[in-house]
Amino acid sequence: MGRKVEPFVIARGTRMGHIHLSVKDSQLASTFYQDVLELVDKLTIPSASWIASGDYHHHLAVNEWGGKKLVQT
Image (cartoon, rainbow, N blue to C red):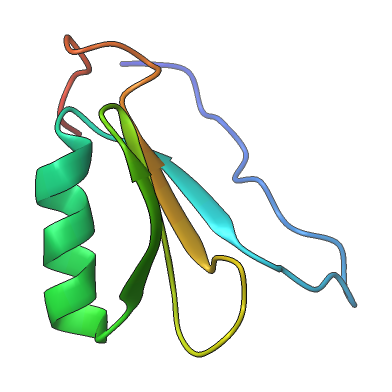
């Protein structure tokens, strides 16, 4: 058996502005989240994409900076 790991808990009152996800294919991930969450592209480069709702700079960013060999969990 593996060791027990306590879950991370965000402090009460914390407000989250946006999320960054490490993905294998940023263009595929960006398209998925745009379709499913109805977000719009704010900026895209070959290895990353920033998407949002409305005029906000970005609510979600996806990038490949962790490498193409990320393990799926």
